Length: 259
Image 1: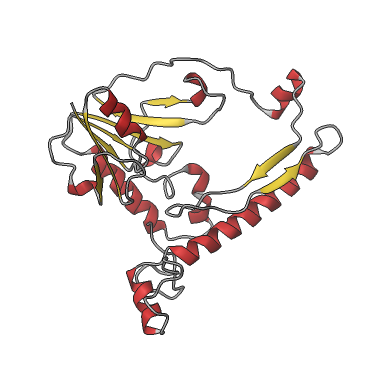
Image 2: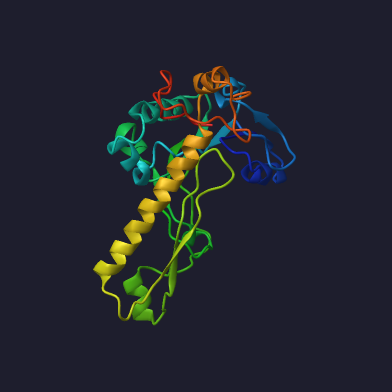
């Protein structure tokens, strides 16, 4: 079976299929992290090459419900979400018999169609809870392989006698291999009122979001941004190999672009 793993550069899913004897290739804008068949570029370039199965992990930056507050608060261009949705539609409409598209809880469900299945890591041997949605075409639902009871909420942990002493707040940034600094919040479940902790938590979230936005602005400029910095005399228009966002850019409107 010819398998295309779209939006993957780790090679993990590709190599799993290859180990079972399938002709598998990964595809991403980034180079692969492990040796193996990989197309570096836009998956649309190769989507019509006669694949039997496609598994796609479209970037969730502009799709996930958890990140939509950036758009709602006017901190990024709504067109970025529309472009991301159109990319998902292109994947769903691909002339491939079997398709699986994976994403966290996102607006794909409200803007395109509801997911066919929602799975969690704890159904497959991992002590973690994270809603992961699957949109399927001519594929059966995944069957859990090993159930691990998740730790649950703080209330659940308290009832089990498990004491949490600290929480790390941080964020990754799409397109770069580093993220924000983690902020460690010490937790006193016994003496601190929930309202007091919530205030500290959301202050940490605001700090992390500000740092993430700063990283984005330092690294996610478009081609027009780069041309502007060159005209301004900043060498090739990059800073440590990345293009800063020009806030007055007429192309990306000062919001930058996905890399």
